[in-house]
Image (cartoon, rainbow, N blue to C red):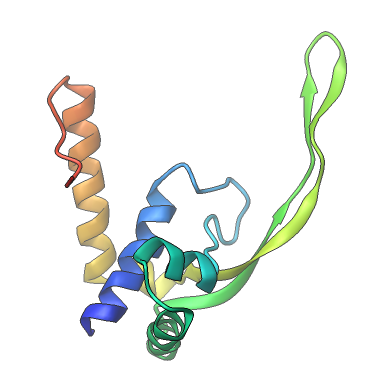
Length: 126
């Protein structure tokens, strides 16, 4: 895996582990090529090239994630968010979740959550 491919996989993986995720299977996190390029401060061409390689390896796949309406069922039923068009982009596949790259990302995230829960300072890399 090249450094560009690794950076894109880490970008999608960090979105998967962050608040960007949704609870709607099968893909909980879908990231568009435009967002990947924006997050990594790359051109869309460079991002698409790395994405194409990761798709060929079977680590990510093209996916779509719906954005349904959200309703509040409190004392009065009300619409909180209108339904929005689906998000189209790339999501990690089953093979990607079994890869060493994902396991490393997940272990780092898990360690940071344990440190946070125990009241330790967490280095965010900045």
